[in-house]
Length: 393
Image 1: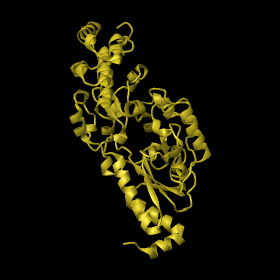
Image 2: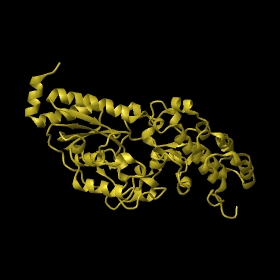
Image 3: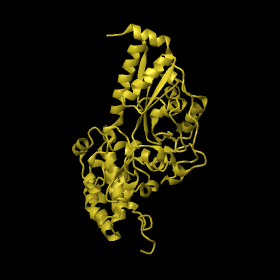
Image 4: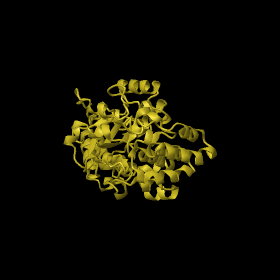
């Protein structure tokens, strides 16, 4: 049942409404809230235009188009963006798993349940309350919609876009999920957060694939997160060794941010690491068929990329493992239905077995291979140096 008296009171007192909305958001489990105009600044618009013109977005076509460049193009009636953050800070050292070469390393954000589900439920609850309390029109957005949350969050005072292009918060470091409620209400903005990166460039220097052509500029085509999650095709040879055992995403630039020293571990139970994603064994992951993949990753953001892309990534990690016990897992994938998987299985074997063994496998499998890209992998076995061995080994 609606409460017109309360709504009328709040509409006449926007300061009280902001305070009530903030309290409501925190009670729902959000960790940060900010208020910003439902419009991008000119700097953010120019940055997006330049990013697209340089092709840094790769094949993420959803970044293109006028709707992405301004919330009011998306919804002309919008006046205010209420930006919400959920802390997903890890309790453990996020990069420790990189040393376990027989295991896969999954990005912190994907070790628990899919944050889209958690965020969207709470955003809808908050938006419904705002609509009922203030008689406002509302729309909810998570990062699957064409809304640039990071620059809007900066305008709402939640944080700033660091040199790694992700949002950084003085309270939560680089570990915030973002969502937004757009509304027709005019609520006073909280004001921009200043940039506190200073001279630091740790996030730029740690990148395994040199994906930052300049501070505050990311070439997604070189980014391991993009390559392992967004990219649907074969991963270029120049990036494979640098991927190490990163099978879904990459946290290096986030994890080294000095502002993380002020961050705390998430209190959200849904973001706690799932047991099957804590040092998952590569040999077991390599043998997942589609049904098993869907079962293992039910409720996980990993499920969205599909089995073939995921096992493609696992094959690259196998090749980087230098673990001879994993050879059989790669050999089994030479007959995989997916050319993405078969190609990376060939590449992995080129790094795991000696020349004679590789030649024998090529003799057995290459002639019947129908896919051009897989045949190319058979023809271009990595040199010993590229396989991580000394030149004279």
